[in-house]
Image 1: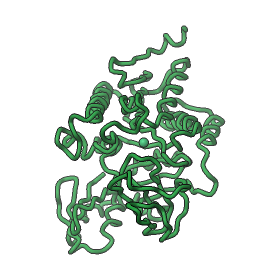
Image 2: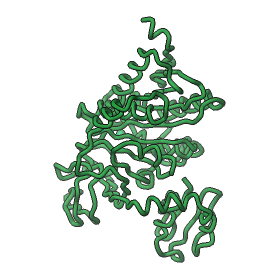
Image 3: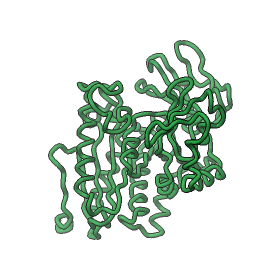
Length: 385
Ligand SMILES: [Zn+2]
């Protein structure tokens, strides 16, 4: 018992902050979200396991660790969400995260959950703002289809740099298709944020992979160093298929479902399966849905909740990645506003008139690290990430 007494354990009244493991105040602060979707419990088991192990160790952390509980009501009921998806209501950060914004009903269970999570995040940021070297947020999830582990990031160079340490596929710019995620909100606050998807909801390996991801994250952030052997062991536990390159992928197509009750994915697709253009993928309202482009199937919907039917992703070339890393640090950036059809919308955003700026607009702004949202047929809004 001596050992546990040495390291103080705080569980705050609401249990929103599930764990907190203190260490050197000048180190990084790592915040882990678990159970943002209530039917995804692997991450919850993983943070309990990792925090429990740390509390029994003697060695002090170089930094702080927090675990925040996600959708507590949905976790209790064992469902993805109660009224609305807790990972789709963080549109445009805090300013717009208020009653009446987007489709968020202030009487929904998830609105209340989101406010508590927001308060917990603010409390942690405030408590450590003077001393912490930096803040890093990770969000643990699982998928409804069988899948290997993978990482989702908003495409910033800082996110890329940390994500690159993990030998798993990395999906860039996901937030352009899936709006209002918790991690986009964190990213808009200016902090590094990574989503980790461990595998299928019901696969026990998802728990081990989540644990391995957390140990490796703490190692790469220098919060808790591992031996070389341990690093290899945890990397091995992430267990990536040998025929799937652990490189970057981008979203090429996103199938949005109006009514999940009328959408049925053809059985048997696994995440990252290769598909040709024209492959039948699902039935909606009795009609076949075929793949409009080639690539790999991503997050096929095998549950009756959620509006993201499936996505199609493709590997990003190494050349594009280094070019974009170069350009984002360069002065050429300043010239974007002189391109035809490009107007300044705000300090952080451009409005693009597609009737004037016809070619490669999305690609160019992606290169420079912008998030590109189609506002209407003729207009794109490009936000600086
Ligand atoms: Zn999830």
